[in-house]
Length: 427
Image (tube, rainbow, N blue to C red; front, side):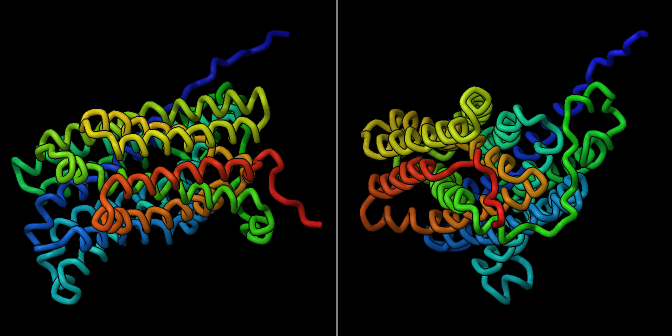
């Protein structure tokens, strides 16, 4: 009897590449305002504190809709949910450049109108990362999910790295509104590409052959109610949320204020500041997949809890040490180097967090990761406003020192996180 062997197709890597590109787009749309703020603030007569409110408005919308976004991805699938989300936030990106001339500005003032638009943009982007986790759960085998989510979220690094220099160049040559219009067109193009090339599950994709399907365990769509009672009775989930809140606080210091810190505090001009502001995000691009790979290898060898905890704790504590050093050194270039390594180590831990949510609940991976990312964005809601206030009161070394302490606390909390035990069983 002849055995037929089929070489597996590689469509799972196409899906992962598309997620990476969407991640790039999300962070282009998120970071561009931190660069254009240089011209927006004097154009509208806004203070640093008012700009901080606008930064935070995005994060409030983003935080509030993490759980609904994850639930939608679990319930309706990642293909339609990510397509609609991309179109939504791309329209909001373009509207950021136009809102001051609309009736919203008459009703709420320019600052209020910009806060409303950025809140709406945050609502759209809230879908992205929980949907990524749902897609990785569906499309990759269990021993590759840390790497998979690390690659997908690693697009944050590329999007955030390329945005400051490109946005600064576009802003100088064509004005700050053009930055938003170009980003909007890019997002709409990515929505079309995702719709055409993606599917919710491998068995739905016409290009996936039997060999590739045999590699992947079919994960059922969540048709049952979310087990909120079980979630609430599982201590690991709440420690995970709290620890990831610490990561979110620190991440938003980079996303909101790093470029302006280099220009206003470290003395770089607009274009050079844009170039050097990309350094932390290049580190994220490298360290995020690396951390995902490390946590998968450690989990395979030493068990889930050790594999996730060692990676998460190492990344967070080293991030805190590097940020503390970067805040106090005199040399601007040494500060950039140390702070960049801080960002890299911070994102080294990311794969351990997101893989832990899938370890705990495959059927509800989107919802549970949305819950965890809500915590990150509660931290992220605080830091864009608190960071400049601390700097104004006591100086940037203290402000960055607080961020460093928060990162170290997030690392210590991994001592309480135990994804290997799974969800608490009802008794």
